[in-house]
Amino acid sequence: MRTLGALALLTLALPLNLVLTVVALLRPAPARATADLPRTILISGGKMTKALQLARSFHRAGHRVVLVESRKYRLTGHRFSRAVDRFHCVPEPQSPGYASALLEIVLKEGVDVYVPVCSPVASFYDALAKSTLSPYCEVVHGDPGMVRRLDDKYEFSGMSTAAGLPVPDSRRVSAPDQVAAADLDGPFIMKSIPYDPVNRLDLTRLPLDTVERTAAFARTKPISEATPWILQAFVEGQEYCTHSTVRDGEVQLHGCCESSAFQINYEMVDKPEIEEWVRKFVRAYNLTGQVSFDFIQATDGSLYAIECNPRTHSAITMFYDHPGVADAYLETGTSVIRPLPSSRPTYWIYHEIWRLLTEPRKLSRLRTILRGKDAIFDWSDPLPFLMVHHLQIPLLLIRNLLRRGTWIRIDFNIGKLVEPAGD
Image (cartoon, rainbow, N blue to C red):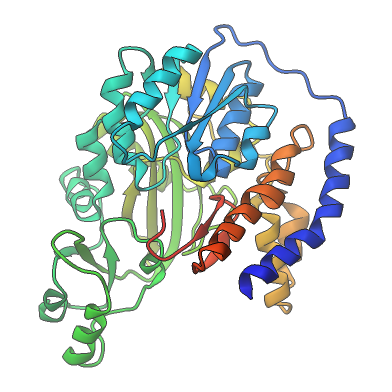
């Protein structure tokens, strides 16, 4: 019934979106910049809004964009963008033929630079593909060993400490019994080290009131040597998330915003102490690529990094109107760019409408819509908005319905259904 209800609501919105798209298409397309050195840019993760945003940024700067995605998401609405010159399907990142499929596209399309827009699973496999692709194009991504270390929450904690940067107390556990046996001197939360789209939202504070209850809670989680977790000291305060594009250990693009467990609103906040933390870390390890950090600032002002994700963050949508994004990715030694003061906070309109329907007393959502900008819709490039909501997502819902699957929510940002044990 949830699936049918979601399909019905999307169908109700179709006529309005069709009219909006036609009106937008009748407007003259804005002039593109002329790049001094036009390049062909390969971007992966085509189903995600952040891939669309980067495609638009490179296109407007005068570059040619090739977008790729796995077959499951081959009808992503983003392939219809004016910013996308060519679209290709590739195997799943963990498939044996993934790197060779990327190489075939690199050679066929004359790709100069590959910018992976990774899912959590894909980060490591794009790093593995780097050695295959690097003789033929530049790859804006880390090496396998570094990506694996950054993606491991416990390893990242140790790297930060070694660099003299503060992080909460973290302890690795590989069996449920270790959780109950841990001597926890204060509140802790548990996090899966491998990405877990469902359990990542459970921030239950441990220990519970009895050892038995703590042990029972731990047994509800898939903790094993193959899927280790960390116990991380809970810090009361304000959470922040960042996206930084770095080359040779230097930050070239940086955005920071307040964070939440299910992040679908992005508004730049000026936190020099966070940017300085990032700057020191990427210099310490001479990083190149895209790195995203989660921070928490305690009530006493102390700053702690919680985790690192070595991939593009959806906070890149805050740069939708910045002309310098392409150079930050392609050129070394550029000045650090941040979202423009004129940029509006980004959101996804269908998420905001759902919040209005389910929480009608929170009229602040109306203010969010009025003062912000939908991250997908663009007057100069309207087809992705139409096709994401009326092709990409409906097809995923229908496929899920036919196989009698279950889903937790629709994520219009990532362009998928969040499913138990999903991608």
